[in-house]
Length: 299
Ligand code: G1P
Image 1 (tube, protein in one colour):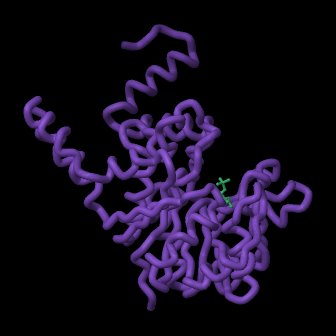
Image 2: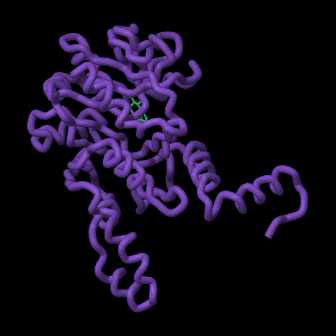
Image 3: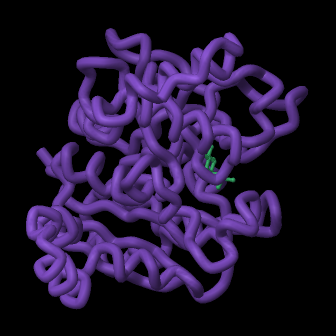
């Protein structure tokens, strides 16, 4: 059985939906309470068994490399300020996996970003986690990527996570068409994938959720992919080519997905995560109740 150890995290997008915050800061570094989005994504990968990560960056993304590197000046400062307990916290960030970087020189799309990982993946199957997407599995379930890896191990074929969205939203996503195979109704063998279809031509409302596992054949398919929606090389189009010659599956999961490049989704994610934490949750809840009920302001 092929064990997947490597992952690509594309993080080269400009983040225009989040300007001006992203003028000088990558959207992947936006904080959810006190941790950048990308750190949540890397923790999901590591908790799913990945130990080698290639991050695809671009111009203006140096903050990402700095975050996962040591920062000796900060450590000296923390020690002199009597905050040695924080040293481990900032030092360990980049230690969870081997992290590598490659730069996408031009914004040619998600397919092109994945193509840049070909050499590093060395012909092995690999995972893809979109760097601007946080996945929150239902309580007690395995991390999002682990669920996709389990489906990969079962099928030995490429798998993409999908979730149902309102039909009005399909034009924001890659959308898949397939049918259940074997005993698992949540695992669909795919016939067709379409990137950002209009509502009237969308084959379903099952939207690609930002977590994938691919066999190495995807790279040849990306090479054969013409520019698609937005003039970009779309990963979804390459997967459509892959599905013509190889089995490709969709795992329809119940996990929640936060698209951090979207302002409202970001705000929801921040709020939910802050509500769940012991240090911020109870007081924040009181505050929200006060805001909504217009009662006495809590302290
Ligand atoms: C990308 C993919 C799309 C997928 C989406 C999930 O689109 O191209 O297929 O559904 O991520 O977030 P983007 O959000 O980069 O436009």
